[in-house]
Image 1 (cartoon, rainbow, N blue to C red):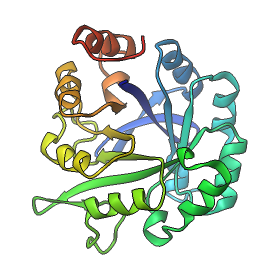
Image 2: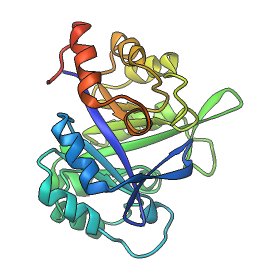
Image 3: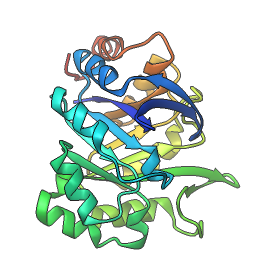
Length: 245
């Protein structure tokens, strides 16, 4: 079954959206936005706190707590998660899954500790891709020597329950997915995988679904365009794809 997952970025307790991880614009109130997406039958909600990611201020879960109190849709929360204390606080604040990217480069065994307490299904391993000299690299890898496909395999072998791939260079551009590279990722992945970055029209969903993508994370497409989750799901249903309406 295909999943549609709104991707929400929180900065200073406000919802923001940018292009290629820069130029963030105010996009509204996080709580009311989440409730709107829930009413549109979002399958999950993805929340990333940019203050944590940018190391600005304290580790603040106020927005997560507010959202989880009124939201019945499963929530994934992330943003510079680098300790088990933070993981525990995230789950106790109402999240169903934790999203971690950079810290797994340093400590892959951190997966074991989380899964032993909360189960592997609670861990989403993030892979943020940037293109350098016509080849994909990992955004947070300072050495730029880690092969993304090999890193994906490593995350899977060590027990993450899910992978989220973000094409940073395409994020917010509406230029379409890199279907060739998505095919390579899917050929090396046997766990649920979410893709984000590049969706510009409804046909982009269909093209990706036709090669095996069944989980889409969407931001700009439903934030600043005349589309909503209901329209996306109805289109996919009309195309004969299995989706929850």
